[in-house]
Picture (tube, rainbow, N blue to C red):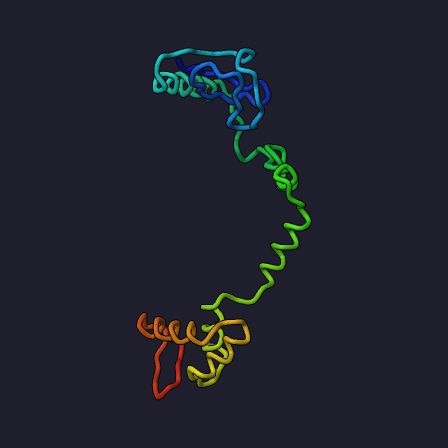
Length: 165
């Protein structure tokens, strides 16, 4: 059996299978005791319950009950990031500091190779490897990256010197 039930907090409608002890609103995440929820319809198939729910939502739209999504303040719906992190057992300030360190970190290996190609006047493989090594990129990676860039037509190599195209 499938029931179409509604949330007393946010007026969301959802379909519940069987008769569980509790169920959670899919919109506001409020947990409800199933026996206390108003069942608007009960059907034998999930498809029929989905049709009833859709019909009820369409009726609401015709009555003008729906709110324009642009008018909803996202900060008033659901948990804040800090609340979510705290509920997950994490310190929000520590997570924020880690994010700042990650964005301030050195460029990716590929970007280090590209930056060396842009910044050096007539970059050789040796010079590109030396410049990329300043960002922790090993020589083997630089050689593979230069070869891939050359095969893709993104760089040209003439007389041992590379140039970005």
